[in-house]
Image (cartoon, rainbow, N blue to C red):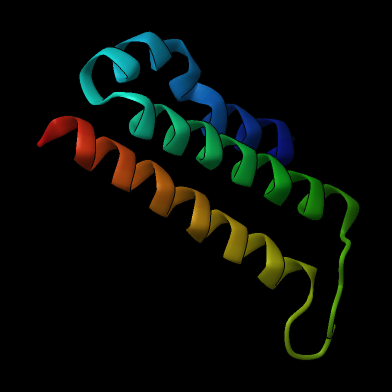
Length: 84
């Protein structure tokens, strides 16, 4: 159940893509889509529990979190560009 909710959260901005394009231009649109793709990659890693590069120190769960942080960062930058 967590993975579908996580995917829905990552792709929620799709509904507003025309507004993002109008307000922020192509850069904002590209950042929002990139964030959605990063969230999707994180969901795949979480669901498959792979890759698991170094299970003791940096396993699949840490890869998932790294992708989540990257996705959040791209969405944050996109919203900041559109808002200011």
